[in-house]
Length: 394
Image (tube, rainbow, N blue to C red; front, side, top):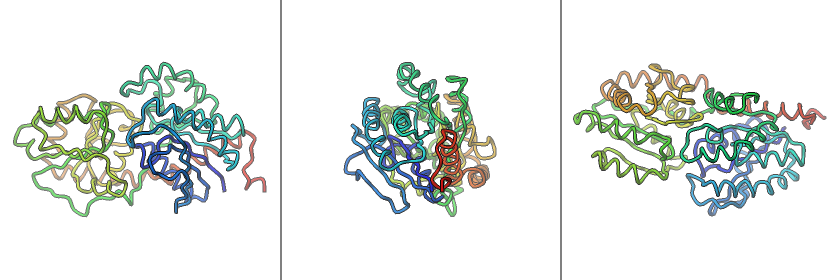
């Protein structure tokens, strides 16, 4: 039985895709018989120490976190500082065999400190925004300033992992001599399952799930919907699950384009509520401008939804064009409108693409496979560092 320390400044109910990936990987690692401790941010009245029924132990450390859905640079730096103190203290008592740091920054420094003090190797799991060159609002200056630290942390890790080929390519452009492994995200295909039956009538219910920020391309989606003929536009509804700083601007845009009655902003839903949101939809739309590997696309495919997505890193690893969804270039409003029109007019196409997506995730993406790959990679780093697992020592 190995002991694995997972460090992520976001963990449910905080954060988005990377938080969910950490949660699912932790759960599956315990199912494989390993011991798992997650180090994450304190928030509100969440318990500082939690022992879950699935065997995962969670330690929440002091930070300045104020919102569930996003964290400022200052708040991330607060986690970095807190984790530099708490991670070695916890590791000295818990004695992990390896550490997995989600995001090179702000989580990598704590993993390095544990290695420096205890010799425990660490794996860096890249998620997108922590890779210099990733297009995300307001982080280009952050990347220029933090780039040397990011590269330094990568070089001292036992492995660096990207969750998609596109993100791996971006990481290699930043650090050409750094080997980058690829372990994709997974999905719980039992939890995110198709509806028993979907309406094949004249109305089309679209769903978007994610942070409401410019990166996600919702402004382009609104323009595409507004460009459809009135008789078609009146039969399409869009539900947005998520929240973020762009919401007021998008609500104003929807009003300006006369879409307010067609667009619903639900805010964030709880984990138990989200599967029902997928089952209530007819199609999933994801017009993002940049991604690592979006969990929400996997969830939509598992739920049997056809996916309309941009042809970017992450999406390209998941969506098979004309087999599981329709793809278009980022910021291409006419192409997005045409894809939505095709789905609105062709229920048989929606059904075929949805069934293809469900088959693909069941056959190729599972959290158990993800957890196994991370465990094997992390423990290989332990062996390479000359440390022997307890089971081998016996």
